[in-house]
Length: 384
Image (cartoon, rainbow, N blue to C red):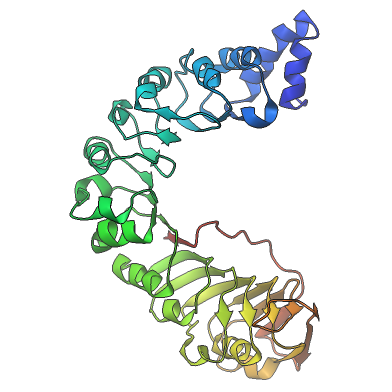
């Protein structure tokens, strides 16, 4: 029974009383978390009631996409004493502040909360153990309520990207309320007004995600203000020249670049990869001079990965002896599926031909590209 998918499990409970008795034991023994899209599954309220009633005392986490108001009424009919992570969205209806007391009653030990609706933030402080809060889907949230939450709860994870410029002006977030944050997601204006000047004091910050419209010069400013000497991962996924970001002496373990970041002859003299150990390009565009500049700049980098990139030339020859000059460790270049195209058209025409001239122990060309995951935000920064 445990190997069946969830809709089939529910169908079985309608077939025989024995299955109706067995299925709750299967759920309780196996599932400590649940992810349900009621929009896709088309569950009846009766089936939802049966599942939630069977697992209410064992669930630790719940992801729920609700299709109609009655789904919410079924959910809040129960109390989930062990559940500390609740994230939800709604379809064809919206929740607001008047619905929060029901959720507070149903989730008395909630730590992670991602609400979706017209919430202003009122009542949220009544989640006594709240630590991780996502406000990105709360269109009516008020800054005064955010400040109250920060002052009264030990927030470790905060996701914003919801406040406009008029809400940010002349308002400061309490330093005591943000200094323990370990994960922060915000847009450019929220970072600039609320966090940038205090970024060096956020010493517990491990992950920073910048959303919305981002510019290379602003990323450089964020890295400068953070005053960190080491960055574990810098993940960039927006169209921008690299020179604005790389002109900073920070040690970077891994840099991942995606989404058509152009490297060309105009920027070639400014690129500086000496502080980057591993760099991966995906969906990026190169002309021949820009690509040669990258290769010639990799004096300390140990891995260069290229996948799904587009080049303005049909073939390229790596000069092994020249690349290895002044190196003390091997440069491994990994090639995925890369195509020829005109850099201004982005229309691939043929696979590129790669050649190697000579051999050297400090240069290796590899055709199997490692599996690298890229972030969905324009900029993701993982500090040590």
